[in-house]
Image 1 (cartoon, rainbow, N blue to C red):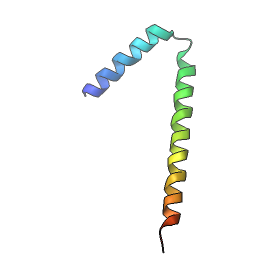
Image 2: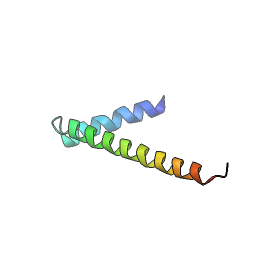
Image 3: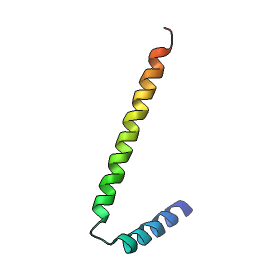
Image 4: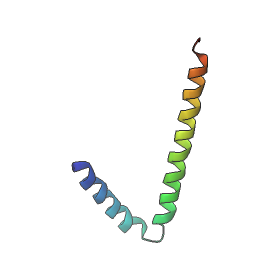
Length: 54
């Protein structure tokens, strides 16, 4: 519950700081970063699975 309150507070501060026009760009950049991180984690997981003997 506390996490949600902090998240909302941070989003409000970012909205005031950056302005409403740049928020979609920030969201896209964040989404792209998360997508790339997941892809890299999947690659590492696949590589480590391939190293194990059958």
